[in-house]
Length: 133
Image 1: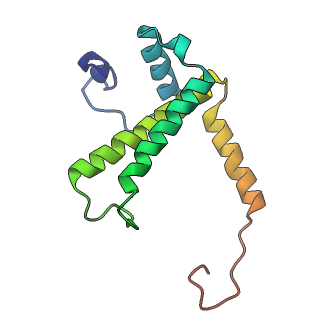
Image 2: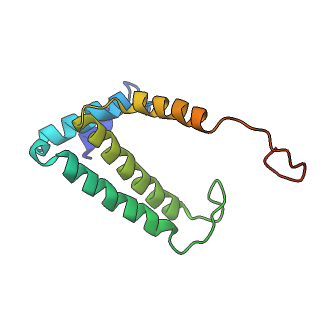
């Protein structure tokens, strides 16, 4: 992303927005692809394959680390930045794929959470020794 594009992601005072919607990302990605003439290459299949590649890159970061605690204790700033980049790549390809397929990703995710709640209702564990009570 060039400097002018980065500046466009800030408000009039230069602060980055706190909350970015999936729609905002979708619009920015569509503009980004259109400005570069990439629309013809952004077929669902191509975007899916690119997404899979990015998931592979994300997986490589964790490949030899063993279990990693929440908050990434003992990770360097560079490692966290690399993770942030790869997680962002995955998100951006997913948002673009949903957009090209004509899906409302936010609504689909909310619907999926409801389906998962019905499929996996809250049940209190009857075992008093369990940490899942």
